[in-house]
Image (cartoon, rainbow, N blue to C red; front, side, top):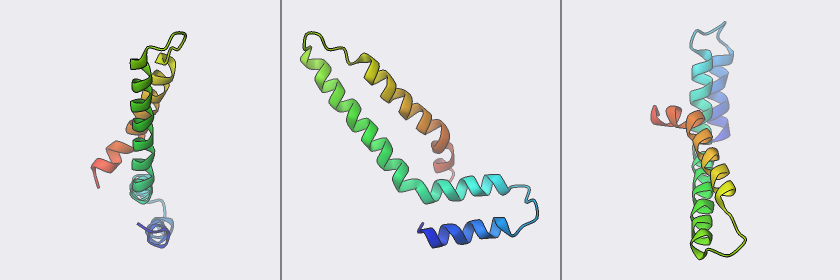
Length: 90
């Protein structure tokens, strides 16, 4: 969805007086608009996790990648909890 289509979709919501499903529609349109960016972030995090796992396999003395891996996994979980329910309903 390009920015004009996104803005047009939101304009419909903005013109309604207190739409009952207004927030849900804004969330749906925003998630749809950001879909490619969301997927790119997810792929970037997954790529970072693969690189970290490769580093862990080297077992370099004095390196502990577990904190970094834990953080990246939490990023994926937060991303999924915010966007995936909406992406699945598209």
